[in-house]
Length: 141
Image: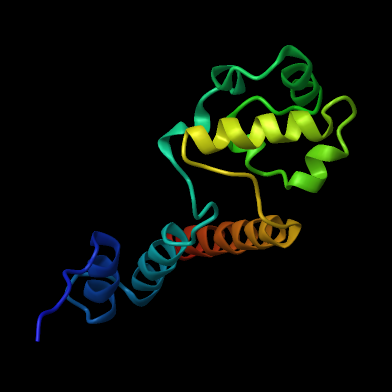
C-alpha cells in the first residue's frame, strides 16, 4: 500500500491537531482554520493567465469596448460571465459571444457554465473570509 504525501497545509493541520507544534488551543485552531481557508477553491479553473488584460485576446473593437464598459478588464473578469449574460450586453450579440468563447478556448479556458457556478464562488469566498476572520481573532487571544 502506497501513501500519497501530504501537502504543506495538510502537514501543518496534522501537526497542529496532534500537538507536534508548540501552540495553545486557540493558536492551533487558527492554524486549522487558515489551512482550511487556503484550500477553498474559488475558481476551479484558475490559471496564470487570469490577470492578463482582455486586450491580449485580440477581440474586435466593438466587443472589447462593450466588455470594458461593463468593467471587464482581465480574463478573470471575463470568466465570471455565462454565455447568456454576455448576450445581454448591448452590442456584443451572438457573433461577439462566439468570438469571446473562441478566444478563451485558444488559451485553454472558458466562460462560466451557469450562474449557479458564480453563486457558489461568491458563497465560498464568503466562507473563506469568515474562516480568516475567525483565525485572526483566535490568533489575537
